[in-house]
Length: 360
Image (cartoon, rainbow, N blue to C red; front, top):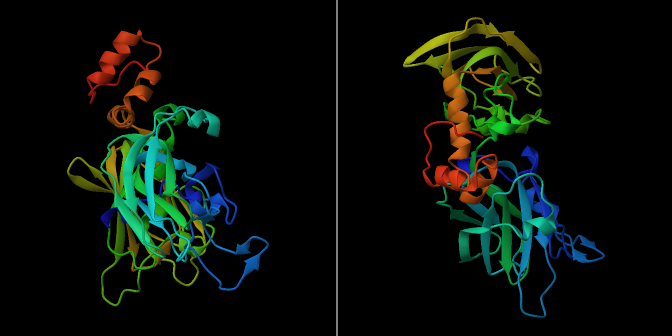
């Protein structure tokens, strides 16, 4: 499925967390959002039975369903969900559904039970020991999802793929990482992703191991590899960080950066020598506003992180705010306009998509 190439908004690696489950007798709920693939070792028994790398509930002896609530590490628009029942064969749930909610702040599980939950994946059959994919066609920005299994059983992982949408109230728009996934940047092209996804380059935090970066296959021609980032918004790059941490015998020898201003690509960083396993920081001269940045690596290799620190232009600021405001569910959009009379706030929300920044 094409959506599986998008970031996993629920992954523990980007700050996702399982807040609540009604039952986790056999295997803990936190396994649902582990970034690693599930593993299984036969005949490994604990005091509750076979140990599973997933979330598993007890066998139901009365009518009902089991559920788990996940806070997205990167709130955003959900494009698809994968319910992975890896290694659950005689104990997987036959059906599931997924709901999503958009909530202000950091609500408790009890408060979330009163949220306005919207169905994004209807009740659907599941197969055991399988990655079960479900496309989502909802354009709104969500902060939490709820997985319900019917009636009980085990799920190894829940992947919630989508596009992060930053809350501009929680970002310093005058000084930020323009390439950060959590700020709304995205990968919009690359030459090769044989070993790992280029989205790792712009993910939160430092890479803990080589596999959490971007690595290409070995080139056997005269070309070079590249990746292109659509910035969070139009901005001026002041400082570039090219981090080859953990890449020792397979770091690129050199790299360069270019930016798209209007329809023209301009040089931001000339071809520059890199060292293995090193965080390189380079000042970027000039004040040209750019919307995209392309990193060329020579000839190939791996990079842990790419950071592009700078400031948004007035156009970039407007686009970041409107991308967020226009994606909010109606109730949350009205809530963020709490400084306005209720009738005026409701009218602004009903008139979306807005083209000018509302009086937040």
